[in-house]
Image (tube, rainbow, N blue to C red):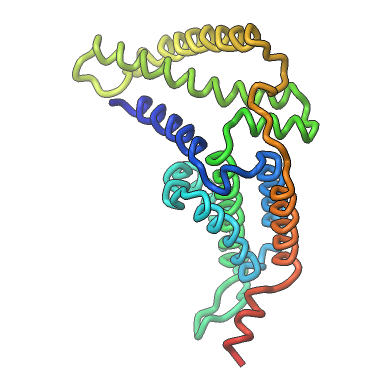
Amino acid sequence: MNRLQKALLEMSELDRLTAMDSPVHRLSPLAKLLVTIVYIVVTVSFGKYDLSRLVVMVLYPVLAFSLSGIPVSTCFYKLRIAIPLVIFVGLFNPLFDKAPLLHIGNVAVSGGVVSMLTLVLKGIFSLMASFILVATTPIDRICAALRKLHVPSMLVTLLLLTFRYAGVMMQEAAVMSDAYRLRAPGQKGVHISAWGSFTGQLLLRSMDRAERLYASMQLRGFRGEFDYAGPVPFTLRDAIFLIVCAAVFILFRTVDIAALIGGLFVR
């Protein structure tokens, strides 16, 4: 099994996660989408030195993973490529902000280190919240929720087709990779002299399959709307979930919960 086939298995694993049954899975896609948007907006609004106040925002994704039955380790494994990029973004902050901000014992911690940790946590928390949405909600229902928020149909359709097209391209790449290895036994990977033709053939084959995929969607009545995803009513439970989560996020943003908890133990 080559790497592309493993990647396809990982994509099918995401479909298995969305088919699970849990309190989080049963929530309305619209409610989960709105909560995720509010969570990300509140998370990124913290100041660059608000590390202690930001830490409490981890409670939402941790509780969501616990209630959904999806291990947190699965999230970090799926996002193993994106997380290093998030860390890299803040890696140079200590080089530009060297002024001491606080002291831990006799060790001075610069503002750059604090801002780097804050930026990294913002990115990781946002990725965790986004993953819990995608892992508990099929892509069709996420797109239907976006249309209910009046996101333009063209953008939503582009999102759906990009998601589908990625799988189509990987399938074609896996087939071509297997065919190449059969014609070049013992060779590791595709030789540099064949990269151009391999990429061109991959593009043509995947575009052809993508066109057939879109044509089949149109034959089944797809016109930019997502009624086929199945109606998921927005119930009182979903409204309570949305209001409570939004209120808690705003509370975490406006009140230093970490300082209040620390004050109970340190006099």
